[in-house]
Amino acid sequence: MSTLDGRILVTGGAGFIGSALVWALNQRGHTNIVITDLLGCDEKWKNLVPLKFADYVEASFFREQLRHSPAAFGKFSTVFHLGACSATTEKDAAYLIDNNYNVTKELAAWSLEHGARFIYASSAATYGDGAQGMEDTSDALARLRPLNMYGYSKHLFDLHAKRHGWLDRLVGLKYFNIFGPNEDHKGDMRSVVHKAYAQIQNTGSVELFKSHHPDFRDGEQQRDFLYVKDAVNATIHLATEPQAAGIFNIGSGIASTWIDLVTPIFHALDLPVSIQFIDMPEALRGKYQYRTLADTSRLKSCGWAGPEFTLDAAVRDYVSHHLVSDRRLGD
Image 1 (cartoon, one colour):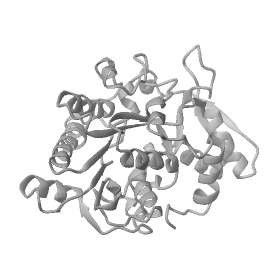
Image 2 (cartoon, helix red, strand yellow; image 1 turned 90 degrees about the vertical axis):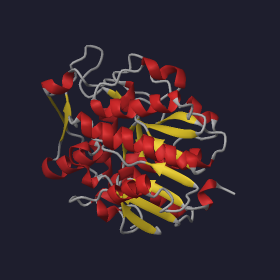
Image 3 (cartoon, one colour; image 1 turned 180 degrees about the horizontal axis):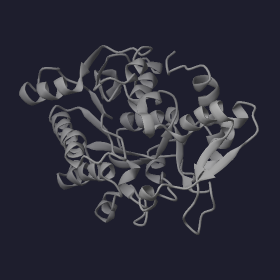
Image 4 (cartoon, one colour; image 1 turned 180 degrees about the vertical axis):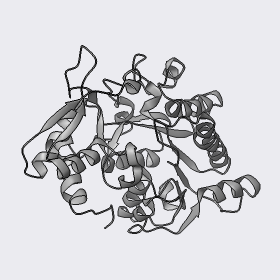
């Protein structure tokens, strides 16, 4: 019996990756899902509309009940904890400590105590500038130096899990550069594909940052991009693989340039490629990653065959089937 055959909890289930995960679970016939999130005043609630799930609970109420009545929501076979503030520009450290670190500690302890499989989102932002490598092993954790408070808030829980001997009982996911449908609500944290599509619609051209590093030409800074449909497939694969435990990089295992990323948008729209390079803001220059590349050997050792979509195919699918038609996953 799969751990997904029982009740499933998805925190952050109205968000970008969370709602995509619920969609992928629905595709596999799973609907006994409880979703928590903080819907607030943006329009991420629209991500929920096409999805099938058993119940929705506001995250603040869920946390309060968990503290005072741990049995109030019954048992779950699997907990996907994807709820967090994902803004890499967030400056309120106290907020990030509580929302990203403390909540994860509480939910992990509760899940493990009640026998639920616990899968949580860490982040590739924990790797900082990559100078200490991007190895998803527990031995590498102490060496990592995140560049922003968001990355540090995620890193803190990874360290906490290691300190308490939890890494052999749970699964942590270091998502790299994920893009795709259901990210409309994310404002400045939307992917470059989403932003570039809007720019092309308005001006016929895309703006990319110039390079301020001698080893990288303009537009040739590199990222490990992964389509959200592949990211949630990898997430579900690890959730259902009994031997999977510890921290895993979730990426394509390929470093591509920003030019590689935006060019297929023009092709999907049957438009000539037009890219303008602009100066990077001073505030970003000391915190900018010029190259990220996920070491996916641990992920593949657990039987994941790799992404279904190439970068070109992923961008074309996103543009043609979602952005042009304004369709969310499940529509």
